[in-house]
Length: 116
Image 1 (cartoon, one colour):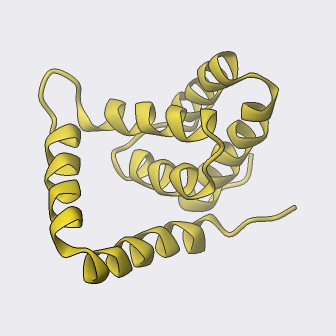
Image 2 (image 1 turned 90 degrees about the horizontal axis):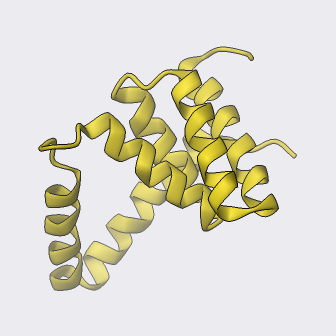
Image 3 (image 1 turned 120 degrees about the horizontal axis):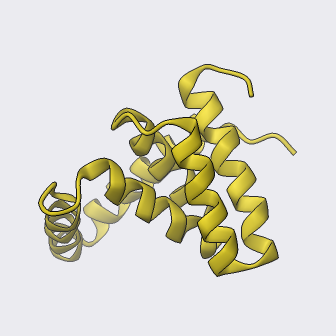
């Protein structure tokens, strides 16, 4: 099964835009929460994106895996860091998380333009 993670990440952003139009007040609050939660304070942004990726893997969310892998890559996470993040998510999420952990590595390779 092959997934286009750039397309999935784009669809996530487009979907949030649809919600913004349909429920602007709620999404404004969500945007403020997102900005505050991802701000680089005691934990840098790259680490926060890796944490969000681990959660996305553990809860089996394709859009989360695509978007947060893209953001982790943009914040200079290495493939090894994504792999270690996926391993931790599998530890916490069990066998089904392994499928999404592998997807995180496939997504990283697509965003980095590399092959394993």
